[in-house]
Length: 183
Image 1 (spheres, rainbow, N blue to C red):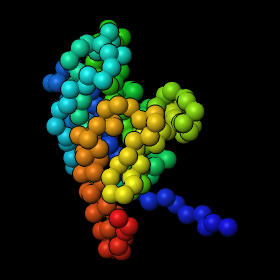
Image 2 (image 1 turned 135 degrees about the vertical axis):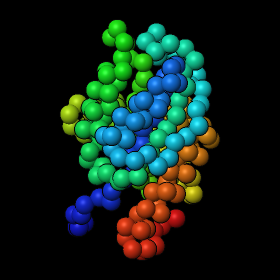
Image 3 (image 1 turned 180 degrees about the vertical axis):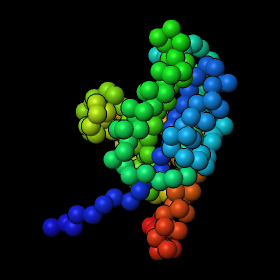
Image 4 (image 1 turned 30 degrees about the vertical axis):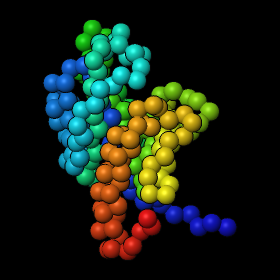
């Protein structure tokens, strides 16, 4: 029989995309007010993997990631996703989103995204929100799964998560008083 224990805290991140790049600093200021200091901000990437958002948000979308210094309990993800929806609405115009905010978390073994959409590979987290393991860490790098979004399969995005994972691992080691963690 296994021993029940609380999970390690995890590293919160947001994927943000918009056609109005001037929104990034404004939204990130609000996110920092809500979740604490941002400790990583990626470069901008062209988001050209789908035209699903074009009608609502325009073309020439740019995407980036930010992560936060403060670690969270993974069970907070559904609440954080709901809060991100309120923030998206705050920045919307004429009933259309101008920015998309996708929260997730990173642990040593996986990257999890929050979603409002159910599917066979998503687990219900509460508050109308589902969680999806999007990448898993294996043999020194993040690996995609059959359902992983194409942009998350890219080397650029997987390298971003490797960078965030290194920060996270260092933070966990400090928290655990330098007890060595696995590779």
